[in-house]
Length: 334
Image 1 (tube, rainbow, N blue to C red):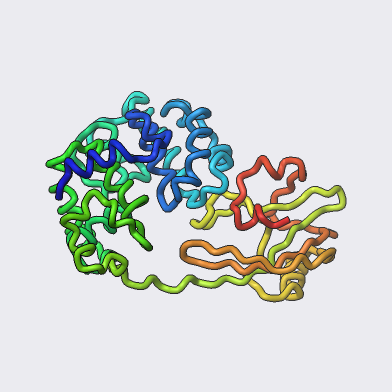
Image 2 (cartoon, helix red, strand yellow):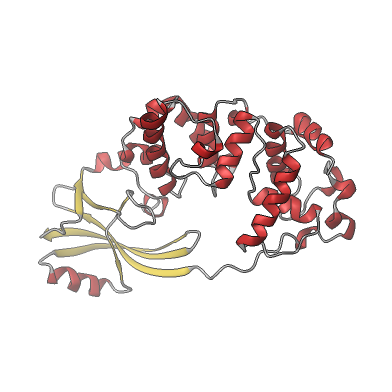
């Protein structure tokens, strides 16, 4: 690989993103956590506000988890921010509020895996540690014409070793970002811009015109479908009732009470068994939300609470609804 040509391309052509204008390991860590499974364009406004509110590890460690999740509402994958807060507290307790400088200490942080640790070490500290994400897998599998199934861990490990061999010959800070940028802007999944790629001279997939067939990723399992009756429950004082999720998906986020059922009449009967009586005000129709691994099909009803209350329900003034962290799946329900 012509690494110098790749790095020169990056220096001249990379997008001027806020988190690229710093070598502060704290800010790079925040950006890498936010970018997990999330597009750069979505992250940018969140990142700027987040750094303004939490400018350093100490400030982040003092955050309230619920308030923190409210700050990132709309980014999804909220469990990562639970771990982010845990990691900030760990850094305060074990590193005197100073972000750790060794790979061994960085990878100990809650929520930090091999990719994130490699990205922090190479970008912030100029240390040659591979950071293999989806963009880098795509670039290398095409450049080397590798048709292994990169959903399989042993194949990813082999590619990670190859990437490690390249970064050891490179400027780690530039190389890691150049590979990510190349995958995001040039070596795209569809319609790659091979004619202007700095690596096209020796790219085997380009030579064979098979770019869009790589990388090979075996088919994921079909998303699991859940059908819910979802209730917007009011009392006579026009408070609204919510539930705070304890499930792994969207843990700590608020939602309207919902029931694994296809019939409002079954839900009414279920609630009556708990001595909870409701009266349906309006059938608000159906709403679908698609997550990475599952689909929620929700039939929404607006109801008034006559008597009783579920111990999991939390009564909230409607004016406070916007101040609570709520997943997009329910925030969009009007």
